[in-house]
Length: 77
Image 1 (cartoon, helix red, strand yellow):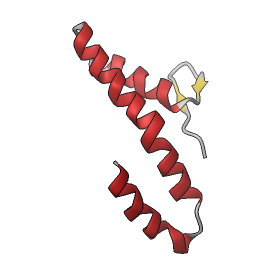
Image 2 (cartoon, rainbow, N blue to C red; image 1 turned 135 degrees about the horizontal axis):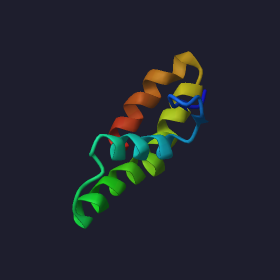
Image 3 (cartoon, one colour; image 1 turned 180 degrees about the horizontal axis):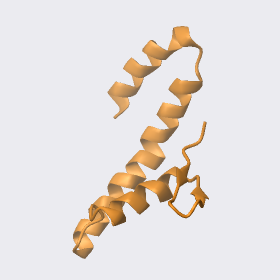
Image 4 (tube, one colour; image 1 turned 90 degrees about the vertical axis):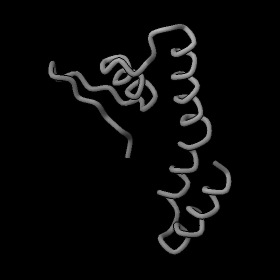
C-alpha cells in the first residue's frame, strides 16, 4: 500500500518523499539556513535510500519472517 496525501482541495499525491518534504516545509521543519536545509534533506534521503527499502521488505515478508527481518534491520541502521 502506498502512502497518499489528500489535500483540502481534493487533490491527491502519492510519493512518500514528496509528502515528507511537503509537511517539513508546511510546519517549518525543512530548515531556515542553507545548512539546516541540507541537514533536513539528508535525513529524508537516508530514509528514502536506507530505511524505506527495509520497511518494504519487512512488510511484504511472510509473517513468520518479519521478526527476524526487524532484528536484522536494527543492526544496519
